[in-house]
Image (tube, rainbow, N blue to C red; front, side, top):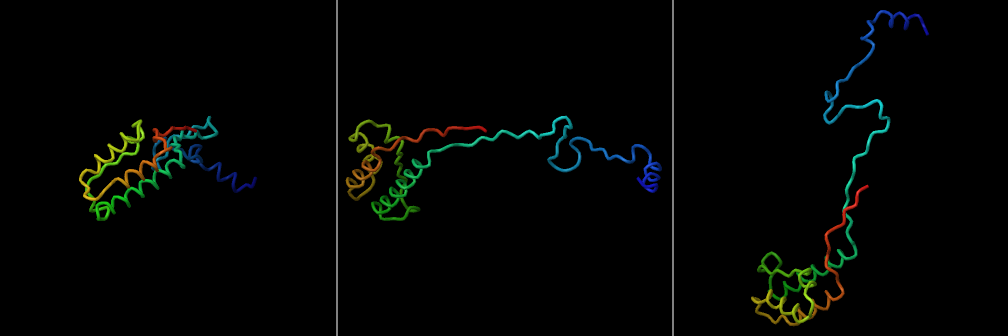
Length: 139
């Protein structure tokens, strides 16, 4: 240790050589740091796990439905009348006949024949599962 640094330290009052921070004061978002906890605690994260394959099938089906409805109503998606086709509701119905009736009711204001569309849609949803609520997984 050199004499210059010893003299500088000796000339300073005891508290002047230290810097003190008050908890919550200073940078935005900085909280009090605790010296006895050497590893900062990680906050818990929650993610949602979806069945991607089933979601992809659903997306493809919905795009197909929009295309078919555009043809049936002779208009673009933005101009299409309000038609509600809920795939999960259709999957809850037990028989194909009941599903067909439900679809025909949704398409009652369409002036073109809808039988081919209904038959094709029922064929496409066969084997699909109803989308359940996503499972939450925490780390």
